Length: 389
Ligand SMILES: *Cc1c(COP(=O)(O)O)cnc(C)c1O
Image 1 (cartoon, rainbow, N blue to C red):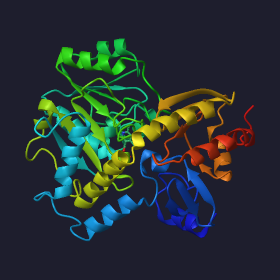
Image 2 (spheres, protein in one colour):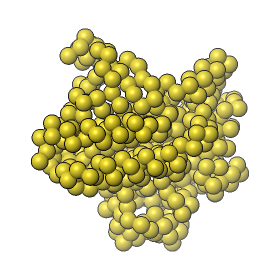
Image 3 (cartoon, rainbow, N blue to C red):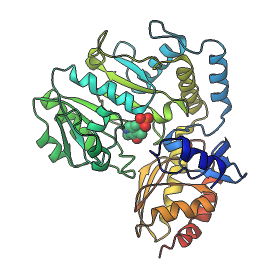
Image 4 (tube, rainbow, N blue to C red):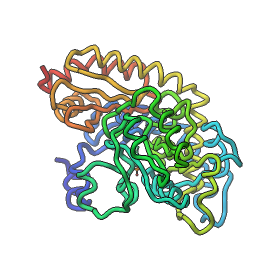
């Protein structure tokens, strides 16, 4: 254990377990540790570092904005804040006046804002999916099914019904005329990248409409280009979309975006934040979006994601590969995901294991073909080293 790992253990709360490495710097999809070892980062800060590490466009945007105007309160606004709100509405196929944005600093806060927004319908009941993850603050936790996360903190804000993910009949049975909202991830990230059956979100839209409920999609992990499209949901128009992770490319920012009439549910005094909508964070997010557009990264993500999925699935010790673009989940032939992550790290690759059997990849959208080929070449050896048969 290094000096910093020991000092970490003495000074930081043990909420995450011991850190695996002490990282010093990064470039593109590569990071280096304190001993000078290099890794290809296939986790990307958990689907955050859209432009990889130290991308010049992000460095320039943040540096120049903080040199001009670093923070103002929400008694005022700034150009990047308004431009980013307009841009996000545009990416969702909406436009200013037809939707409204509330900026936050994180995914869980985006979901808190959305949760409060749903209460302004006058209803309190929310239907969410089992296996979903929506954050760790009390409201978002109330909407997250995982027992181990919830149990130590109960009672949580109530009136939440959990239904099996991907089962439109179960959803239809749970939603009533008292339901304020249906909340779903278009692809479940923390569950290990679970993709619902075709037509599930369209069914959710119909069920919500039948009962006058809002359809709220949590795109915190799946949104902002990760799937090769700006958002993982296509062909349906939600009432509320929450984003964060990839939005700022590593600068903390999230957003609760409400389309149509839902945009007017939160009124003066209903919600607030000191840092949300900070000009530097908004400038960072604008730089991320513009770079994805200018460098045509959505197309790149689609092609590279398919190549990775095909290559990883070619090994028979991989029993299933799921996902879209560069949000990839795979199942192993045995409960050895921790061993695979450890073997990968030794071989110079950062991977993630959301469950004992599942591996998740969420690399920077700027991952190169060479980076992908390097993992595919090392993959059988990593599975050997992990003891998989
Ligand atoms: C990570 C995540 C969150 C929580 O975001 P934080 O920024 O960690 O608070 C919420 N929803 C989904 C789908 C996520 O993946």
